[in-house]
Amino acid sequence: MRGWQGTGVPWWHGPAGYQVYLPSFTDGDGDGLGDLAGLQEHLDYPAWLGVDLVWVTPFYRSPLADHGYDVVDHRGVDPRFGSLEVFDALLARAHRLGLRVLVDLVANHTSWEHPWLVAGAAGRPPRAPPGH
Image 1 (cartoon, rainbow, N blue to C red):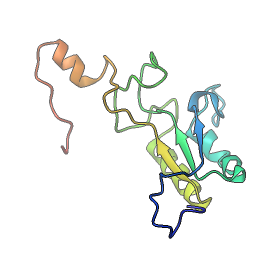
Image 2: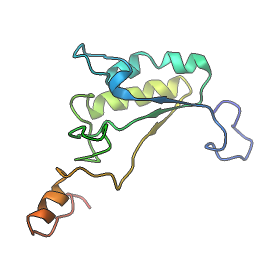
Image 3: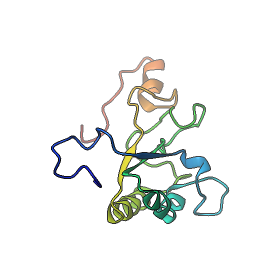
């Protein structure tokens, strides 16, 4: 990180950040909604400003009743915002530009459409996701 490398100070103690509310940032695919491709295309702007990290609001699958904080799947990308492959490309570009990417994850913000809540409401015990 610019200015923090080799100081012994944890990276999160003082860097400048740039928060991106993804739906209103930049539309990369022409559907009128900001997305990961649009952010990737314009990462040079926060880098030019000299910030150390880009903080991205949720882009998980969600009914968007709570601006994306009502998450249905904490492990994937909502197709409205892109894909895991687009996110990987965004990360690679950010790192080339010297930027860290902080993804807003509030694990206890879960949509009523999340499979665990649907199962619980139906009286069935929830199942752990595959691989857990």
